[in-house]
Length: 203
Image 1 (tube, helix red, strand yellow):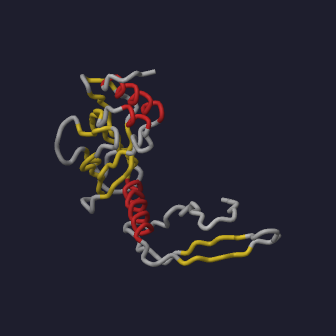
Image 2 (tube, rainbow, N blue to C red):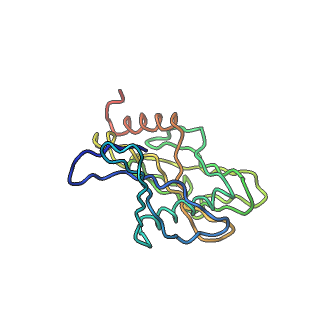
Image 3 (cartoon, rainbow, N blue to C red):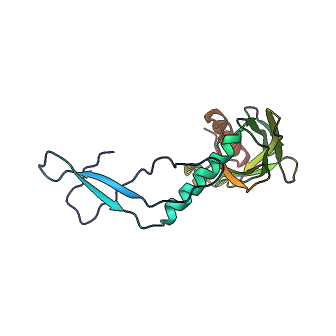
């Protein structure tokens, strides 16, 4: 990432954190971190290396590490994704949440939460929603989505509309959150459906 900073009292720069270094079987502890910048001032030809220490422990880094590695631990055992088939039932859209075997362990899905735009729930209420036995290759659970908001402004601000938190565990362990998003073609269908249910223009 290369950015030109003009003469100003303050400039806020975006910093990419990169992927977390996750460990199998457990969540790693957050380690001291630094930000490394290569800076060239004015007509200088060669950049200078500048290292900034981040206060430790940093709450943001701690949360990012926990969230990413929690998801990693679940995905080692099974992939969790929305199925391709969706149909409208009344004012709701019915589809499936599919667990596909990747590694060892029984995987249990306890809950699916909604987003800024959609309310998500299992078709048949209860906990767990789905259980993938240690010997099973895959399993699907029926879920339903309904619009959470119907104001036009909501559809213009849809950055997180399809980031559904799914709470799951492996072998009866701690429940961890995996973010599941439907593919683009399903997202388009869900937007069209929600606009129709809300009585808003679909084109």
